[in-house]
Structures are given as C-alpha cells and as structure tokens.
Length: 293
Image (cartoon, one colour):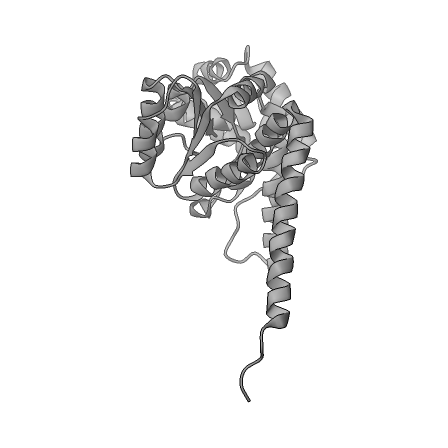
C-alpha cells in the first residue's frame, strides 16, 4: 500500500481515484470484482487494469492479492485506527489513531526500503570530504537531527535550513562531497534548488522523500523513500517526520558501523566532555553565594 500511495501524485486522475479507494480500505476492495471497483471509482475496467500495471502489478488478480495481504498485515485495525481524526473523537481514540499511524509509517518505511540504495548512500557518506543536508520547515528538523548524529562521530556535516545559505553553500561543493535533500512531497522549491546546484557541481546527490517520482527524486542519484500517509493535520508533518527520522537513523547507524572502533571512541569522548561540562556547572552553582539577605 505504501508503494501505491507514493505514486499517487504521478497517476492520472482516474487511476488516482482507483488508488485512493483501494488504499482507504484494502480488505473491502479485495473482495470486489473489477467491474464493481470500476463502478465505485466512476471509471472503466480498462482504467483499473492500467492502474494495476502502473503500480507494477500484472493485473487485477494481483491487486486483489496485494490488498488482501495488506489487510491481513494490519490485523483489521486500519479502518478503526488508520482513519482520519474526527471532531468528535475521544482523547483515547486520538491517542490510538496517532500511535497506530506512527507505528505503521515506521513499519511500512522499513518494509519498502531499498537496502541497495541505502548501502550506496552509506558508501558515499563514508567517503565524503563534506556532507550537506537541505530541508525547510519540518524537514529542517530532520536535517538538523542527521547533522547532530553524524557530527558526533566526526563527520564534516552541515545542515542548512536557510534556503539562501543552502544554495550558496551548494555552489562550493565538489565531486568529493555529498548533498542530501529532504522533502516529504519532493516538491519543495528551495530544497530542489540547492540539490540541483549541488548536482551541477558534481556532488553525489541523495533525496529523502515520500514520492519516488518527485522533483528532488529526479535530481538525485540515490533516492530513499518513506512510506507515510498524512491525514487531516498534514501541516503538522506528523507521520512523515517519524518515517524520515527512521531513515536518518538507519543511515547514521550504518555509517557509524563502518568504523566501529572509531565511532565508539568518538561517542565516548563527546559523552565525557559533556559530562565534564555538566559537573563543572553543578560545582560552580554550589559554590556561588546566595542572594544578599
């Protein structure tokens, strides 16, 4: 289902209707005939078949199998906890729906992750002279998280949430560098511009996005896709943020693992200096005289 949802923006309107109906309730749609599904989507059987092929399936029987499998994996909870948050939902329902959506985003992201692409990105990051990460809005938080993690193990990495700084910095990259663009939709203009500039300079380019046919995906040599389905509160970047952070964690751990001893040493040293700073602060606070009486 995550693969189908990731292709939604690139599908023609009629095929998009089929995709939406199919992913909204896979268990129910798996029981429909092709003519019933076509009627429900106000389209033709030919369009349904065309949709099946567009998402990599041989035909409608394969789609029904995929839908039934997806429904079984969700344990029947999707229609309950995977639904939109309604105005009259209880707080208990809200908590369950948010938890279910976040958990499914992580599970589906890992299930569809192209490990070969991840390995190629890890190779590039390990060999890079310099790593730059671009993202705005909620994606900037993910970029900063990746910067903090890689910096702790001694990598030269910069996250640029400011679009002008990102663009000018990208202009100074070389073929020895890596540029990573993060955008849920893959259509964020500022991120695409910085990634395009990095590509022109010969840097290895990487896209982290939910949509493999998006603008930043087309600019990138390597694409790492999330699998999320944002709902009513999309502006809060909820499940997309959780899924992208999962990818960032996978990338960081894989890079750190390449030189295990050096990673452990770097983490120990940075941990020790932070502990020392905290102790000095606490000791200084204890020695400070109290306010005059």
